[in-house]
Length: 231
Image 1 (cartoon, rainbow, N blue to C red):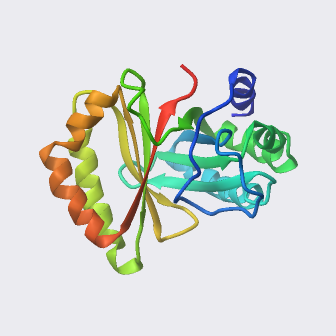
Image 2 (cartoon, rainbow, N blue to C red):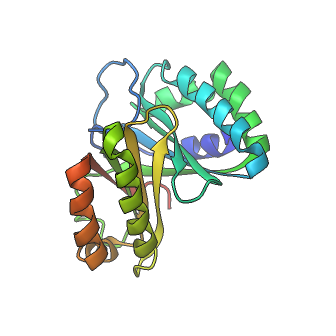
């Protein structure tokens, strides 16, 4: 993961963004320039034998990284549809903060251990609330769902049904529903679309218009759209 992050850091330019409005644990930090915020989705694929070890190491990484200067959020998300899939979700105030994090003791110690146990793929997207000018660009959506314990399982059941149907939609590249490994009230859709027309068709589909309103009755949803930052 370290070499992937360094490669990303070397190619990143200034990123147009919006301040996160929801998500996972948030570190105390000074306000960030809205044009510099970085969101990373580190996708992890792990075998059953290594899953518990990867979760434990990742939780340690989360706890330490939330204290890093410039960190806005950091969490481990576990797929509710596939136990081999998880994701480290992180948001940084700027590239300088991410660079310091990548050189930190906890990062350089823990990430190689995780990497030795699992396949990792760092994906960088720029936070972009207005996607109207990005019709031909790959779009990543992180849609957070905040809920109480009483509604959690009902939301997961509905969300997993939405995932199954949405994976068949034309233009879909990826669709999953995840739960935080550190906060039982935090759930999240992570979805990737070929372009804006594909997303528009999905948003008008029968499964979307039927299931999403049911989820909205059970939890507070916060949508964060992103445009691919590194083509």
